[in-house]
Amino acid sequence: MNHTIVRTSAYGPVSTAAPARSRPACAGTDPELFFAHALSTSQVERAKAVCATCPLMENCLQGALERGEEHGVWGGTDEDDRRRMKRRAAA
Image (cartoon, rainbow, N blue to C red):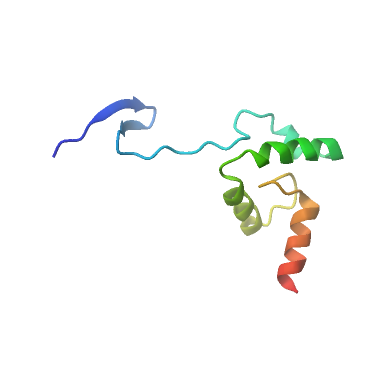
């Protein structure tokens, strides 16, 4: 077998056949934007704007719903958005 290795990472060799992994748009952003104790309306809007550019937004939201995240902005939603989604799903 002939495998081409192009580089290594901290986790080991990376093959040219390995698919590229998407990075969340929030990577490198101060977590306080998404998880401050009292999120202001403008802060929530800024956090949601970051989420809107994210290739992983739907996965993030699904994970937050599965884990029952009650705080912060996840997948472009805030606490109130997720509570409304839960009420609609229960009805």
